[in-house]
Amino acid sequence: MRTANRVKPKTDFGIEVRLFTAQTGMTVKELAERSGVKYTTLIETTTGRCAGHQLIPIVREYMANYEQKEA
Image 1 (cartoon, rainbow, N blue to C red):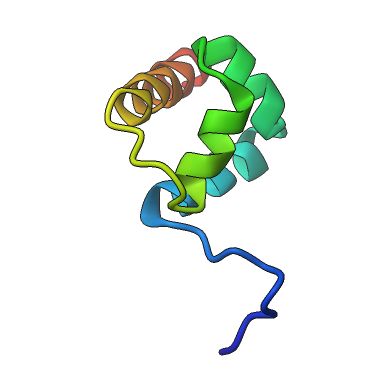
Image 2: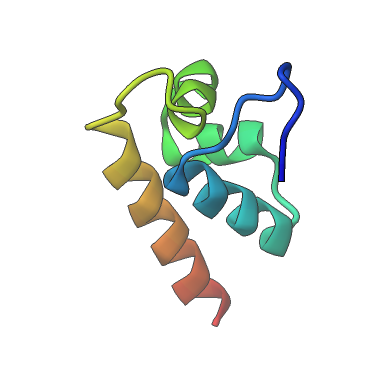
């Protein structure tokens, strides 16, 4: 399947973030605020524009803790 040139394809982490936000009804901006990371860096990490060595573990930990609280 081809994507439009204007659409930046998501990384595996980007897909994880989109699934999480879709399941919880949370926006990416809210996820960034609640996990304590910059919104722009989170967006760039989900599209592969920056590595996010420090950001990815922080956001993944928040998402895991959020799911445990809801269960």
